[in-house]
Length: 91
Image 1 (cartoon, rainbow, N blue to C red):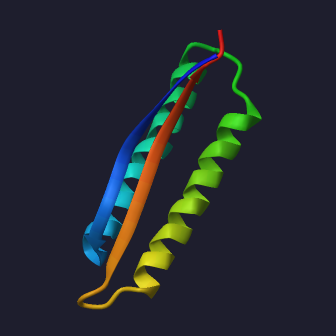
Image 2 (image 1 turned 135 degrees about the horizontal axis):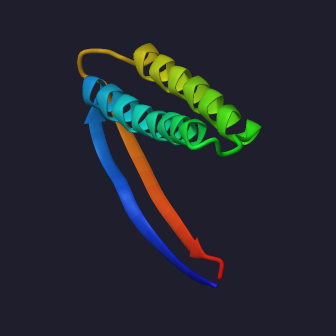
C-alpha cells in the first residue's frame, strides 16, 4: 500500500479568520457531497444512505465548529488550526 501525507492547514488564526476558514472549508465539502448526490439523481444512479448521512454529519460538525469558535471569540483570541490529508492507495 502506498501513502502520502500533505499538510493542508497549519497556523494560528484570529477568531474571525478561523471562523471564515473553517466555515468555507466545511461548506465546500458539504456542497461536494450535495452536488454528487444531485448528479447521481439526474443520471438515475442509485443513491446511498451513506451520502446523505455524511452530509448531515458534516452539517452538524460545521455547527459545532462555529459554536466552538464563537464561544472563544474575543478581540485578541487566536486559534491554532492543523489539518493533514492522509492518502492511501489501496490497489
